[in-house]
Length: 448
Image (cartoon, rainbow, N blue to C red; front, side, top):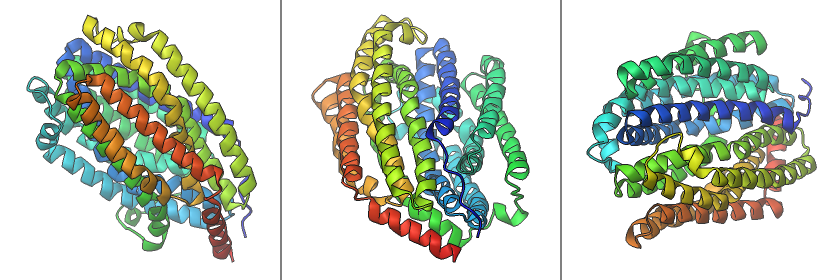
């Protein structure tokens, strides 16, 4: 039987992930800045189309959320052969799901944007942009699955090199492309960069993992391998889709306030995305390490790791949010000089100080629960909060009570804390242990 993979260190995984995420957010910030310079309506259209694109990409989470976990568990249990079989199985699933998302974006952009209450001056800008984003959805599905496999093999530096190259290509092309074609130029540069990333991932699979996909791997859907991925991925996708749908309800509420409110929301969200990166990188690294530990039967080590990572994440996320709030008007000044947007956005950044520590519970503990095999609890426990507090609270506080964007932000904070404390209660009471033991037994049974 192959030996188990060496126990990975959290920090060595987290920092390349942090840089990857920072680069991805950085490109989004650059795009938002360039769109905002065209007009605040273009900034709002850029944000709205990207929200819809992100919602469609959640279709990929059906398999994407389970890839890293299942590959890590098999590597931790010493089953490289099964890890390779799962990796190849995800290519066909990624293609079918990514293709479906691309088709929906291309054919249904108008109805989707109208569903989001896109203002009349935003729709003509957002519609062609969303159509142009469609090819990137398919390419992103492939890139996400292939990079997840590399990370599960602890090839985080190689993955980082691909991401750096991909975003460098995007940034090199985006300014001239947007100057010539507006928002559509951003999508064109995005597609070219994703083709580069896809090519580099294929080369790394061959050179570092000795994985050489055959033609059939791009279309087939093997039941056994995908069954293990879907066991983790379906509940995770349901949790992500539930959150995204609830969040899109809040965006639709903001859309009722007009293009200026959408622009304010878009600019503050760029700052929030940067703030949450440390917690997100930590959560993804925790998922990989805990997956290896559960596969190897190291449950006590997994528990200590999560407690340590969560404490660190809360402190750092609070500090980053506080710095952003103190520098609020300067940060927002990168996007606009509209005084009303600057004033309201600064208020929202102070409310973000309340949101981010609660979000860290979700980013770290949900990924840890998923890595143990306890994937259903996050969606079952969080569904009511996402529907009633995030979506319903945004509508009640923002629209019905007339609190506007601050009301929406208060709903965001309440939802993050409610779900986060529920997840921590699950972990602290060791309710995940039976799932972890069952996962380890399954790894040993396959080895025999």
